[in-house]
Image (tube, rainbow, N blue to C red; front, side, top):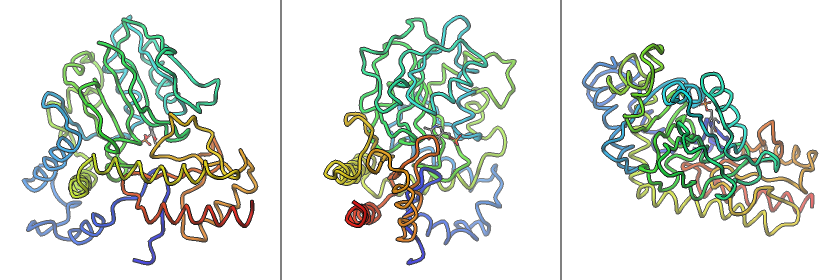
Length: 363
Ligand code: PMP
């Protein structure tokens, strides 16, 4: 398919091509239904099969314990920034946040509207180029829960080992690295992720949680904003994002076919290493992120520690060479290569070749 280019966008992001093909083939007639998934009642037998398959796939790939619930919601990760404190805050017990960048800042803005918010650690003074070390984290032992962002899409840091927080429920925004590596779900009270990076298309938000936490919420909250509503009706309280859930079911098949999350994780490590090795071997490219915290999903690249003219040129010439989505986030600048699960070795190699060539011409 020569008209498809290498897409390094941070999200919505590249999806596995075989599943796009499958969706295309099934677009007008799903199975023997005689209709598109988009035209199907969310109460139909066919759709029940689709949502059950998406959930079973996610449970299998993430090894989700049976006593956790899996929800397919709307409103993006941004609604979870509000829904989590609305549901999990216990009056008088603060919400502790480990502040690691723009996405924890947005989460804190929502927490502050409904709860007492405490910063348990922050690397803002170092412009979020690293994550707090365990001895820098000061938790309130009575915290309602602790909020972290497992992969900081904008600053390019990723928790290698999650902080040990004892009995306090750990809530993680895994929007940009869910399913990219093996994790122990049982260490988390609640995990949420917008689908548009590693799970499927935009419009679906996955929540994985221990159901007892949903019982903390006052029943006076709007019905749609209580987790218990969605737990009770198995994500079918109202019309869910049906096509997105169908796409998730296909992505789960694709992950299985790759050898599951362990195989995906190994691929992701190799892809990231290719890029970081290229940066570190060059005196031209730099990565501001501390080595031990570098993300395997979003690789931040600067040219000569921030030569904006050359960085702009890099991004423009990359587009002309068939490599799109490399412009750094507007708050950080520079170059960012997002290399989620569906990113191919071919794309990463093409980027490495382009980087080397650009350096020869401009170094
Ligand atoms: N958290 C993280 C880590 C993200 O990367 C993003 C989106 N890039 C969000 C939250 C916000 O997600 P949404 O647009 O789905 O609300």
